Image (cartoon, rainbow, N blue to C red; front, side, top):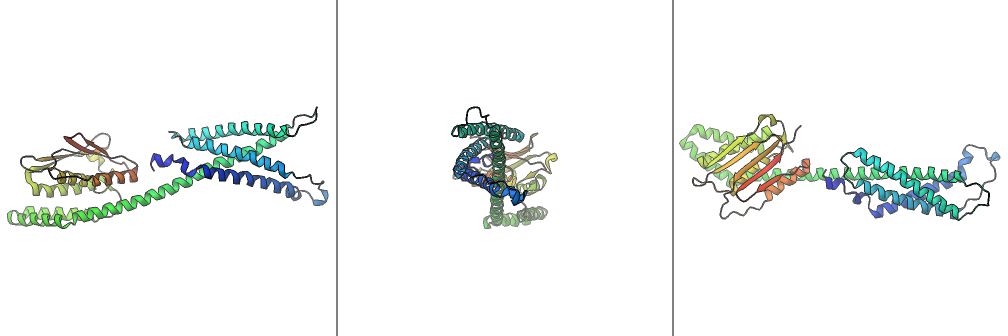
Amino acid sequence: MNVKAQNNVKVYLSVRRMVVLSLVISVGIHVLFMLAFFFGESLFVGSENLPPAPKFRFGKMLIHIAFSFVLIFALFLYNRKMMGINFIKKWRETLFIILGSTLLTTVLSISFSYLNLAFEPHRPGTPFPFRIVRDVLVRDYSLMAVVVMACYLLRSLYHQKAIAVENEELRTENLRSHYEALKKQLDPHFLFNSMNTLRSLIDLDQEKAGDYVQQLSSVLRYTLQNKEVVTLADEMACVRDYCAMMQIRYGDNLKVVFEVNSKYDNYKVLPFAVQGLVENAIKHNIVSSKQPLVIQIVTDDEAQLKVSNLRQPKIDDEGSGIGLANLAERYRLQWNKEVQIIDDGTHFEVILQLIEN
C-alpha cells in the first residue's frame, strides 16, 4: 500500500467520527459506573448486610460525562496527529502516542478534578480529597487505553479495507492489461504482417520460416498465460522471440542490444512490461536503412532494467502514452514502485525496478 493511503488518517479518524466515539465512550463508561453504583455491592455482600444506599447525583454524573467527553476528544485529536506523521520506525510512533496520551490525560484529569471540586467547597480544616483525584485518574487512564486501542483498531480496519480495494484494482488492471496484450497479439494487422513475412520466408528460406513459426508460437503462448507476475527470465524469453520476429521483418534496420545480467533471472517483473516497451519503441520510431533503430535492454547493479533508444519519431505519429501510463499504474498497485521515464528530446529511456523474491 502506498504512503498516501497509509497516512490518510483523516479518513478513518474524521472529526465527525471522533465526536461520535467520544460521546459514546464517555456516556458508556459512566453508565457502567452508575450500574456498578446501584448493583455492584450486592454481588459480594448479602442484601441484609448492606448499609443504606447513598443518594446518586445525576447532575454530577452529567458534569463528569462532559469532562470525559472533552478528554477523550482531545486524546483522539492527539492520536490522529501522531498517526498522521510518517515515522520511519513504528516503535517511535507507539512511544510518542503512549507518553503523550499519558501526559495529556494526567494534566486534563487533574485540572478537571480541581475544577469540579471548586464547585464543592470543603469546610475549613478538611483535608483535600486526594482519594477522589486518585479515582478520577484511574478512570481517565482507563479511558485513555480505550481511545488508543480504538485508534489502532480503526487504522487496522482502514488498512485492511484499503489493501482489499487495491488488490481488487490490481486484479482488474491485470485482467485489462492481459486482455489488451492478447488483443494486440491476435490483432488481424499483427497476424496479417506475420503471415506475410512467413509466406515470404517459405519461398526464400524454409529453415528460417520454421524458426519464425516457433517464435510466433512462443509469443502467442506467452500471451495466453494467466500470471500476475513473472520472472525476468520468462519475460526476456518472450522479448527475445519477439525481437527475433521483428528483426526478420526489418532486417538490419533494427538492432536490439541485450545486456541483461543472468543473476537477475529469478527477479520478478510484470508480464509484457519489457516486451511492451520494445514494441512501443518500434511502433513510434522510424525503422529504415537511413535511420536504423537501436534498442538497448540493460540491467545495472541496483537491480534496475533499462530500455532505451534514440528518438527518431515518425512524422505522423502522436503517441497517446496510454501504454506507459498503464505500466506505471500496474507497478504502483503491485509493488508501490515508480516507473522512471526519461525523455530529453533526443534520448528516450524507461527504467523498471526488478523485484527480488
